[in-house]
Length: 255
Image (cartoon, rainbow, N blue to C red; front, side, top):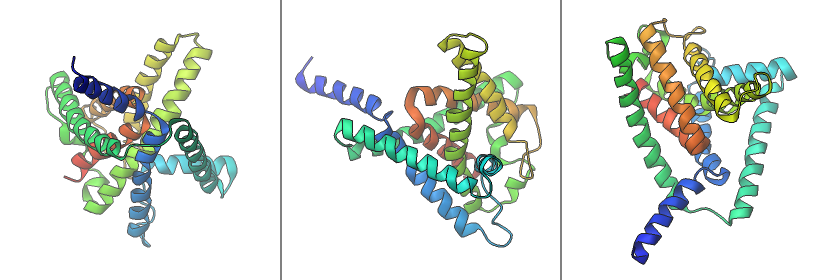
C-alpha cells in the first residue's frame, strides 16, 4: 500500500469516527434549530402561530407540566447549555474541527435521505403490495393543504425535535428500562427499545389536529423509517441522523 493510499484510508476512518463526536454532531445540527425557529417565527401570525412540529409541542408541553409556564424556556436553556458544554469539552480534547467534514456530513445526509426513501418504500411495497413512498405527503390530512414554507418548517422540525424526542430520549429511556426491569443485555435492550420506539414514532404521526388519517401502509412505512433512523443514530450519531430525517421529510413533504 502506498503512502497516499494509507493517508486516504486514514482520512476516511477519521471522518467517520470524528463526525460522531459532539463538536461535529451537535454543531452540524445547529442550523436546523436556527432555520426551524426562524421559519416558525416568520410563519406565525394570528392564525399560524400554533403550527409547529408535534415533537416540539410535546417536549414543551411536558416541560410546562413539570416546571410551569417557564418550562419550555428552561428546557431549551438546558438543552442548549448541555450541548455547548459537550461541544466545548470535545473541542478542548480534540483541538478543533475540519470545515470540510461538515460538507461531507451534508452530502452523506443527502444521500442517506434518498437511499432511505427508496429502500423503505420498496420494502413496504413488497410487504403490503403497494408503493406508498408518498404516503407521508399527508394524504388527505391537514398537512396536504399547507404552504410549501410551512411544510419545510415542519420537515426541519421533524429532523431536529423528533430525533431528540424519539431517538435520544425515548429509545434511550426504553433501553435503560429493558436493562433494569427486564434484565436484558445491551444488545437485547437496544433491539427492544428500537422496535418499541419505531412503533411509537409511527403512531405519533396520527395524533392531534394535524395528524394523518390512519392507514396500515403509511403506518408500516413510518415504523420502518423509525427503525432505520434508530440504526443510523446508533451508527452515525445525532447530527447526521437529524439532517437525514429533515432532508428525507423535505423530499417527501415539499418536493
